[in-house]
Image (tube, rainbow, N blue to C red; front, side, top):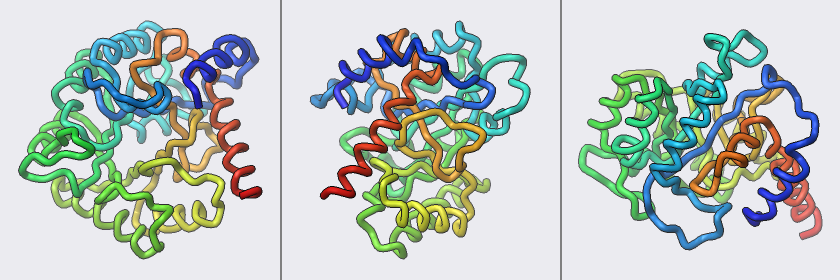
Length: 278
């Protein structure tokens, strides 16, 4: 979707429509790389957030009364009293890039915010490895971050398009990545992040994936489906809000308040129509 169109519709129309209360929803922010890199893709598809913009976004959260907590903790506050009277927001990072350690975490820690990081374990080693040209965390850094309160989850082993794999290969990606993180950290892993676009239009695959996640011992799965998590939602098919450098204050705050959830509904309809009429 064109960033200009989604921004225009969000701020000119959906921003002013009544929305469901914050007590029934928790925003889960989806970040990837926090860096100065220049991406040659449309703004909507960019994965990088400039450090200055990331710091601004954390400031906006703080100013608006939000507190950044782990995904696991945030989900416990659905339909319950908020932590210290503040609004919970889960801050998540996919792909395990090293700039979480060098750039994002110092900003988060300075505000007392927590985060959840999802690791593609085939790119996390004792020696430095890279994914998509970006250096990843190593296990020493992961353990150091864990000791400081960062929560870790699985992002598969090799970051494949799971929808293209036979189910036994999907199970291997889920199970082996989980075991690698548990062996390295000595702690149970219950969270998973689905790589690439979640095929929500394929209900059969979605159902089998949820069954596989459950069998492998996962309690939560975050996806690329746009929207906020809500009390009636399925914790193994959680929606998130993508964020990058293009999210200025108006758009960022609109996403937190539910004014961007319409994008997820529109995408779901389009994907269903393409599947029906292909």
